[in-house]
Length: 236
Image (tube, rainbow, N blue to C red; front, side):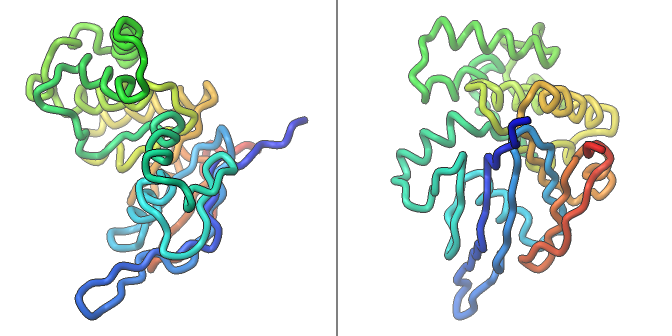
């Protein structure tokens, strides 16, 4: 059987910030290995360093020291334009605050990431429609974000994250602004995508959410990995 490969790896990564005369050690030497097809939770309370870890895992930030590999490529030495291009193809982002463009319709929001990858307009439109139907918003394609509920906006954000068919979906507190029922619907979508081979990385402060849905859980505390545990969905 072919061995699962690491799709993202952080090796002895530090991330420090200068705050006036003080240095804040947001991450203080962490190691994370995310295997292709895994469902990973990065877990920790506010101020633990999990958001910084998310930014580094998602190639949105670079380390002060250490190495970050995306599909075995050391991204620390890439130009920003090259990094943005690789990130746009390989990683889809779902943000807690949705981050939809207010003056674009749901369909136009989903089409946007494909524009940056220079795909044809007809393809962008067709794929956006397919993805919105996938997340059960076929009747809301031409609505603007302020005409949608929070749960509907999050589903548009999920469709947008899938626009370029990325290998990895990075979800930052994906249920944080949602009611329980809508949150369960969103998590159901993520589990379905994982079953279809997508690697899911979820950042959360909820132990229940991490245990219920993830296979691998990284517990972050004071900028370090405190422990690694297995979630309910881990393979026996």
